[in-house]
Image 1 (cartoon, helix red, strand yellow):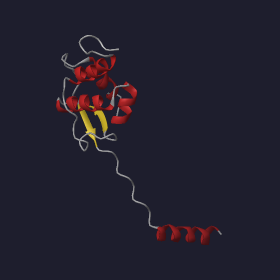
Image 2 (cartoon, one colour; image 1 turned 45 degrees about the vertical axis):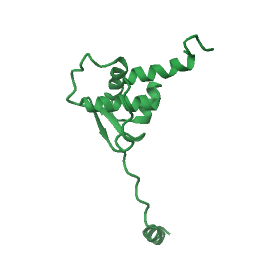
Image 3 (cartoon, one colour; image 1 turned 90 degrees about the horizontal axis):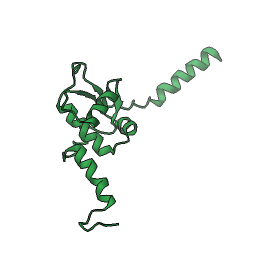
Length: 125
């Protein structure tokens, strides 16, 4: 259903994220990927009143410890892009700290594993 001015329910769904993010762009994927870990800054004990309700809710969520960007988006039910933009803004303001995700462990060398297995078999039968 389209109104006389071209306004549709789909338009309303697009306007709200734009308003929440204040029209800011997405941060670089390397700076804030899905697996980036985020927590509230320890020095940020006093929160400024100028933060939006959405930013306040993100800070409340992040103050409990490290969460990934994907987990934060899941808890808040905000679109992922909106979460990334708001987190980037909070990082710039010094309210949040980020840590890159833990790197995947290197696969163990097959020869070493076989030697360990042979040693265990020799010792314990």
